[in-house]
Amino acid sequence: MKTIQFNDDTPLPAIGQGTWYMGENPAQRAQEIAALQAGLDAGLKLIDTAEMYAEGGAEEVVGAALRGRRDQAWLVSKVYPWNAGEVDAIDACERSLRRLQTDYLDLYLLHWRGNVPLEETVRAMQTLQQQGKIRHWGVSNFDSDDLQELWSEAGGMGCATNQVLYHVASRGIEFDLLPLCQQHHTPVMAYCPLAQAGRLRQALFDDATLQQIAQQKGISIAQLLLSWVIRQPGVMAIPKAGSVAHVQENAAALNITLTSDELALLDRAFPPPQHKLALDVV
Ligand code: NDP
Image (cartoon, rainbow, N blue to C red; front, side):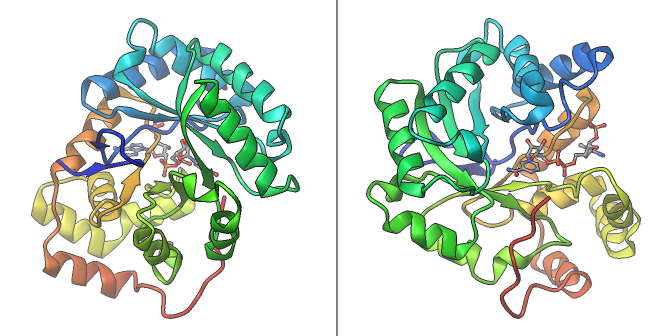
């Protein structure tokens, strides 16, 4: 099984569970909780959420899913950039903890870079660590120059991860950001590994190369996309799945390995970047 390690923590399965758009619709709540719990049962230990998702609603769903089994999950949440100041970040984290019905996060991320100076956010993260409210901290949507700046701040090297958009049709990070993170032993969390739910995702699911490889291997397109994202060391995927069937399908991708011929076919259909591209975001 492919794994990922944050700082010196215990290695985790390299596929986790996203939660964006959970907690929006009360009619879906029971199914979302069941999906997250099935994911935990299937070994998808890392759950990624944020104060932004349904304005706290997703954190509440996660809290309900983890009732009585908090210790089985590795819990990640994120702070809005405008809440990332020295005092505000403490308050925001405490609100997240209340919604999640827990007293600690395994990882707390700055959701994207805003106007609060990075050194202030680093100090807030360190305070939260000292208070035992978070075990690790990291960032999201940071390009190479942002990361270099962060690492040059006092304490900035404590950053445990960078969470960025990455899937087979958006490979820009492979040019410089991913190698930079790998050199610094900073794991990358790939968000939107299935290209979300819109037209691009449909185009991928209809793509002839993906269909051919998936069919020959006896796997689904979603499993192919996930096994492609986690094919390299230091990269994990956090697909969001709203049903038990999808979660179980995604978990099975942890044990799928693509051959060099399959990877070459994918490189031809979805070429890697030949120059620096601006970081893709949603
Ligand atoms: P994903 O690429 O994970 O796609 C989610 C879509 O894929 C949903 O429609 C889901 O449908 C579908 N899906 C899941 N599993 C399968 C499957 N096996 N077969 C077919 N379809 C499937 O998009 P997200 O935007 O949700 O990204 C993943 C996570 O990353 C987010 O939930 C969030 O936690 C995080 N994120 C972080 C961002 C950041 O700025 N840091 C930005 C965006 C996302 P269904 O629900 O029906 O299962």
